[in-house]
Length: 125
Image (cartoon, rainbow, N blue to C red):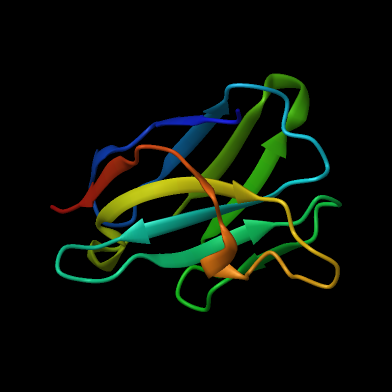
């Protein structure tokens, strides 16, 4: 059964960078789309970026141009490179995966079934 373990979170000053890693328990095959989500204090979890099996990626407006999602199937790892971080980016970050049905896009956020435990990112001076 596919499982994830995230790492790379921490405390960073505004304008700084972090790279989150998400190691899978097995090879992430092309049957899975992958996504990154976050949950800020007092808010619902939101999908922020995702990548389809053939590397088509997507970002919500608030992270577009600052965050980059990538996957290394051979190393069973998914990454989220986060640059120009803002205090509003403070949240617990989760990676996730699901097997899409025909025509489903990776931003079908409610469809994700495999989750990591999350890693805390705090952006503060």
